[in-house]
Structure formats: C-alpha cells, structure tokens
Amino acid sequence: MKNTLRKEILDKRKKLDSENLIIKSDKIKDSIIETDFYKNAKVIMAYIDFRNEVKTENFIKKAISDGKRVVIPISIVETRQLLLSEIIDYDRELDSGAYGILEPKKEYIREVDPDLVDLVLVPGVAFDRRGYRIGYGAGYYDRFLEKLRNETKKIALAFDLQIVEHAYEDSHDFPVEYIVTESEIIECNK
Image (cartoon, rainbow, N blue to C red; front, side):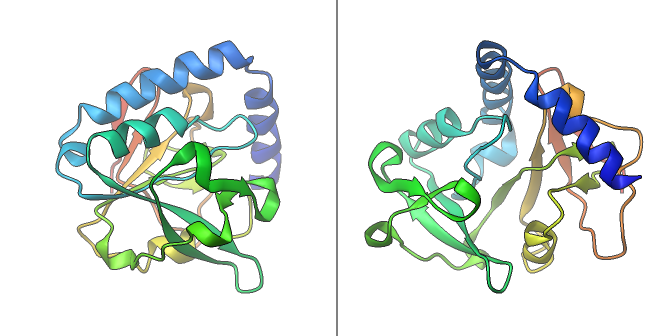
C-alpha cells in the first residue's frame, strides 16, 4: 500500500514542469515567512530539494538574509543519521553529496547541535492531515525528528498533490505539526 502510494505521488510530482514548481514553491516560501514559528525561530533546519520536491533555495537565502541561522542535513549513509551543518553562502558552499543531493563541501561543514534548532522543514513524498508522512523509505527523518526538543516546530513542505487521505504510518513514524502547501497551512490533528 505505502509503496504503491509513494510511486503514484512521485509520478505526479515528476510531471510538474519547472515553471509551476518555482511558482508553487515560492507561494509556500511566502506563507512560511509570514508565520510566527518562522518569525520566532533563531535556528532553522531546511532540506535541500531534489527530484521535484518543494524548492528550498529561495527560502534558505531569504532566511539567511533575515538574520536566521540556517542548518542543512548531511546524510551519513553508513548509520542512516543526519548531521547538521550551518550554511552561510548557498551559491558557494554546496556540492553533490549522498544520493545526489547538494551538501556542504568539506571545508564548509560547520556542525550544529540539533538541540539548537527551533524549526525544522521536513521533506517527504506524501502527507496526511494528521501529520504523518511517507518518506523515501530510509528513515533518516523519523530517526532524527524523535531526537529533537518537544518545542522544536516540525513543518512539512508539500504541494497540494502530495496530500493524501492516509499515510499508513508505522509505530516508528514521527508526525509533523504543520504542513504548508501552495494553498493552505494545515494544522495537523494529533
């Protein structure tokens, strides 16, 4: 069930043309920066998008220019853990890393303790309105999210087409508190 849904949503997302991808992503970025959880956050963890995910480059650049500290994940493939590194210059510091996703070049790795993070932007394939997600199947984010402070806001970024009726969560799956799409901010029912 979960794998079929994952494939179906990935296929739909793949069909988004680059113009639509940018327009929808910018609407999502504009919605987030209006929220109190963005305004109150000092340290924000953002993912670097790939494969037609909600684009995060403009969000990251805006947050840095707003004086936020922005950290991005580095995938430690051997242990399936995420290491956080502060990014200061998006255009200069990144290179292709694990899974072909942009990560900081070695000389720009500035490790940051996850306890400092106030707001996490969570990627995924599909989300239901309760905040459960279908990821890519490796479990990096579920393992990471459960280690964060309770006060850390967990926000998923998704296109409307990624909202599903049921995400078929497992016992180890960790829900987000909000989902921001191009047309709404969903406060997830716990």
